[in-house]
Structures are given as C-alpha cells and as structure tokens.
Length: 494
Image (cartoon, rainbow, N blue to C red; front, side, top):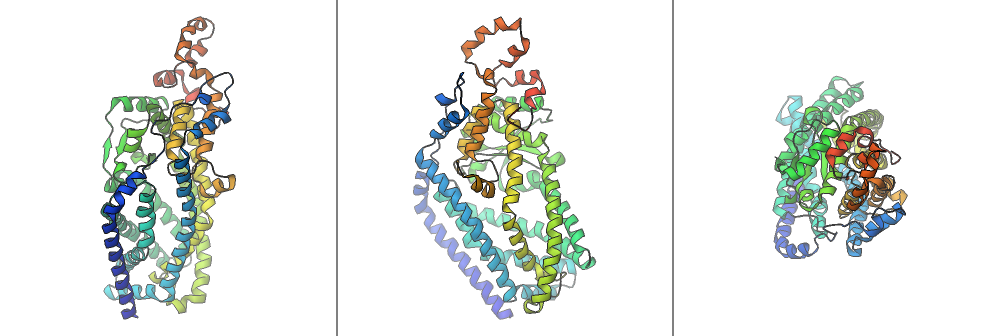
C-alpha cells in the first residue's frame, strides 16, 4: 500500500508540474488575444432619455433603456460566462465526490493516517500532519480544474490581469493559509471528537462557529494583505462624500480603504469585511478608476447598509443554525457510514483522522443541496443593502451604472427560477428596476438645475419641500435633512 500511495502521489506531482510548464509556455501567445477580449461594457454609462426625470417617468421603460446601453456582444459574453458557472457548480461537486470516494476506497486516507501515526504519538500533531498530507494531495489532484476555473477561463473572458506565475503564486499562498488555519480547526475538532465521543457534534458545532468568527475577524487585517496591498484612500474628492455619508448614517468611519485588485482582475467591487473592531469598508482600485462619483457613492451607500443593518452578525446567527443542523446530520450519517464501510476503508471511528474524506464528502453533498438556501439568504441581505444605499446616497442612476459594470461577469436578465437557485445577489435587471422604482417615487429630487430658480417661491410656503430639492449628490444637505430618507427602510415603499 505504501508503494502504491507513493507512486500515486509522485504521478500527480509530475502531472502538476507538466501542466504548469505547458501553461507558462502558452502564456505569451494568449496575452494579445486576452487583451482583445477585454471587457466591452460601456466605460461611462450616461443617463438614457427614458431614465430622465419627467411627469411620465416609467421605471420599466427606464430599466429597458439602461439595459439597451449594453452592447449585444458584451451581454452575450457575460451571459455565457455566468451560465458556464452553473455547470462548474455541478462539475466541482462531482469531482469532489469522486476524489473523496477514491481516497477512501483505495485506502489512501488510511495510509496518510498511518504515516502520521508513525511520525509522532502526540495526537494534535498527528492530526496536523494528516491534514497537511490531505490538503496538499487534494490540491494537486484538483489543480487542473482549479487552473481552468481560476486562470484560463478568467483570461478567456477578459476578467483576469495576472500572468500564470502570479496566479500560481496566489494559489500557493492560499494553500499555505489552508494548511495553517485548516490545521488549527482540524486539531480542535478531532480533539473534541476524541474527548467527547457521545456529544462531539454539539461541541463541534460550537468550536466551528467560534472559529468562523475568528476567521471573519482577522480577514481584513491579516488575510487580505497577504494577497493585496491595502492602503488608506487619501483623495478628498472621493473620501469626503463617503465620510460625510458615513457620518450622516451614524457610522464611526474615519478612513476609507482601497486594495489593488487590478493586479489580478478587471472586476469592480467593494465589500464590508471583518467583525467588531476590525470591520471596515473597502473599495478596489478598479471601482475608483472606472466608476463615476455617483456610482462610487451608490456602492458605498450599499456597503454602509451592510454595516448599519448588522448583516455580518445576522449572517453569523444564520450560520449558527446551519452549523448546528449540519453537525446533527453529520452525527447520524457519519455513524451509519462507518458502521457499513469502516472496515473496507480502514476507518476506525469518528476520532480517526482517516475519516476526514467521509466528512468532506458529506459536507460537499450538504453544500450542494443547500446552494439555493445559501444564495437566497445572501441575496435577501444584498437587496436590503441596495434599498438602504438608495435611501442614503440618493444615486439611483449611479446604482444603475454599477449594476451594468457588475454585469461584466453576471447575467443581467435571468429567469425567476434561475435567479432563485444560482444568484447570491439580485440580478442586474432587478437591481436597475429597483433603483428606477425608487427614482420614480422621489422625482422631486432630480429637477434640472434650471428648476432651482423657482425654489425661492416655495421657501415661504413649504420649507420641507425646499430641503428636498437639494441635489441628490449634496451629501451635506442629505445629512442635515436627517434620517427620514437616509435611514429609510429596506423596502422600495420607503
């Protein structure tokens, strides 16, 4: 068995380096073609005529007008990219099932366990040594699929800017992080399983939740800087409106952060990450370079919505329920699997590290089945943040522009079932339509500049109306008006 395992691992390593060599040799030939396939979404999206404020403003017509701004070639390509992702979900799942089954069926997992046992008698270290073998081996086996998904496919659709060497270096960094953090969690969980053989699923759920909170907390300050350069944004033209918006919404923000995401992708994005004192809002440099001021304010209003609406704590609460349910299910299925196939796989029990492929196999099945549930939970929070961002920034057109730019890698107009199953954000069409609905209910905010001359006649009769005529990008005026519109609620009816 040891000879067969060594030959198997050696063959995989040779295959891995062969693929790296082929990919590196083809990199120079692909660069020009990939550049020609750079994103074709409009760099600057103007407000279409149908989306201009008028007495006959129609949100549906405004939405269609914005979607008409997208070139047909760009839309077909983004549709193909996103729809291809549906199949990758299936292939990733099937690949994982076959890989974990093979590790059990051919007793590769048992061989790795035995090697770790011969290396040390200290159980936590034994668990860690097994985890290192498992992580490295599964990374090598999954390398061809990972290279296709993470590099070649991204280059094909004009979404990647890295060379293969740069991408491969990031994979090695991710592998090292997985070895360290995954090893810590594995030692904790197997320690729990050995100490509490009857109630390991209860304590395991608690440990997993606490470890998840720990990982979320260190992400922006420890993990992200490993891959990107994180800096404070110092351009007052960008930071002042953002900080004013934060202050108006009761967010204690003093700095705005950016990352150099352009080192590996063309995607525009921003995010809220961290937990407690490490929580922060970060923009990537693609957004700063390509987005309009109104678009940046709309996106930042959205991200502030995640903060104010406590989406990270609520997500932790959601995953507490998921983790408890998953561990309860794992207890039942794992015990049954070991009773039936334990001898065939040479797995001695729940505390045996050789059982890990069984756990990962069951986790893969659980995650695959729960995909629509996870997506729906995230999509609901994203919609709430969208509505908050519209009320806070008052930039519906900036929001529509952002949805179009995000459409470079997301299908804009899916069917309802398609969106329910596969989308973790509202679709581009629905986001634009929601923004145009909000605009239709607040048309008085978008009077042409010439209309301000008529405001003096209103001051004596209705000062509230005068305040509401402030330009939507006048953040200071929005702050002075108070929280009626700024805070609003997570509904288009606000």
